[in-house]
Amino acid sequence: MLTEAHVGRPDPRLRPYVEGYLGYRERVAQPLVRHEVAGAFVVLILGWGAPLDVTDRRAADRGVSGANAFLAGPFDAYCTTRTVGEGTGVQLMLTPPAARRLLGLPLGELANRVLGVDRVDDGLVRLRDELAELPDWPARFRHLDAALLRRLAVTRPVDRRLLHAWRLLDGSGGTVEVGGLADQVGWSRRHLTAVFRREFGLPPKTVARLVRFQRAYATLDRVPTAASGGSAAPGDGAVPGRPARGGAAAGPGWAELAARLGYYDQSHLIREFREYAGRTPAALRRPGSHSSNPG
Image (cartoon, rainbow, N blue to C red):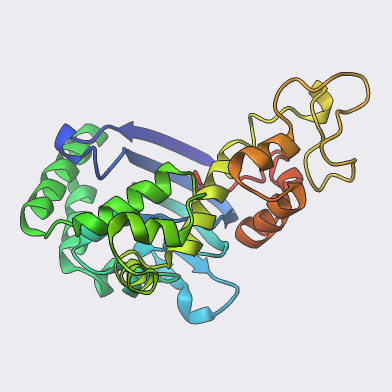
């Protein structure tokens, strides 16, 4: 398998919406299957060459077959992707407010679905074709800047109260109560839930769980392993939270992490991983088991 990755930084005017561009070229001789975790984000792939199949185990019509340019999510369950051959493209990871602004459509139409860009916006199809014709990654990233800035100029800003609700929820790491969130933005809980679901794709309670899971997922490589004298990873058959024999914990273990992130206990954290990643933290720590989503 041959993989190239190129990271681009967007124009400063786009930074509130897009953290970065990931350009890739991948050549695989045998079918490659990846496990993609759930997340409160939207993935935009503008690719050309080998297509992907995206499968949601819950319903066939939520995925897509043979697409190389598509929009996905936000998703409250894990899915799988499959590809073979050589493909090139650019990936953007967008928060719900950023996707709502840049795409100019409510994310309720995208939640738990993968749609080819031809079904969403002809402008994205043209953008993909233009990127494919450019000679190198710097030129592609500059072209993306210009295209996204034009979109910002013609799309309406997200409602300031809804944006405030998102920032409070995300800033709390998913621990804020929905009732308290509604009070802070001056809406009833029912109204906040309805507007949040319509505009950002999922209700605030689900998004809070996903934000918390994403933070836990991002720590997988930082929690000490049993081999290094840290606490055993949940799901590896050892006593949860107990340092491995031969040494004291080298840093915050899983039980402490669960408490810090707002889980009831370590078992609660494991259940969330099984639901949103399809695997335990221990299984995800094994070489080659991570998804390509950053979580």
